[in-house]
Image (cartoon, rainbow, N blue to C red):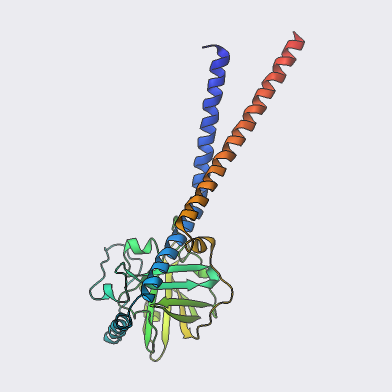
Length: 302
């Protein structure tokens, strides 16, 4: 192999290496965003499935599910609080709690929508590690989120996960903001009336308050330190449907044909690969042009 061919082969290998490094770097840089978009898409699909199952329930089965939830709350007039983020023990939901408000048998009891931070997340039974990595967990031992006087449901989710935002932006909530629970086809709106930061063992703010219909959202704080708990409490208010949609692109995509989503993703991937190719080719042309200029210059000098 001539020296010229060896040099050309070396340049090809170098260009391939640069392309791989570029794609790897882009992947690392985009991973949190892409992962969160995927989590939003997955949540939206699960919520859509839950809502579809709810609408397909017979009147008898619907009333049965709602009655079971009301009976559960009546049998638990006092909240039994645990730290939502205590990972020392494996969590397993008890029975019959694990089946209430669950028409599909897949662990979902509804969804929560927080317009202020553009979040729409599935609500699961309990606080298992698997649940808290993908959505919102209902704190077992607190009221089920179906509304009613002298009820206080507690919902928890992580902040700052590498693959999902979840409650990352919950600290942006202010008194007066609204969040909505979608449970078995009903829309339950809550207006934020109190925001507090407490230690994990300070649970009195999660107690049931006589006559009030409350829901508290819980996450870790400060961000990345997680020594305290941020409590965003809402009190029941009238539900008013939003005129404009606050849905994110992944949430809108979840309502479209999956084949269209796959096709769009493929197009984006092809464009990215083509962009890398063009960048490498442009660099190669500049290098070759530079070598020719040097060769011509050298020839003239000789």
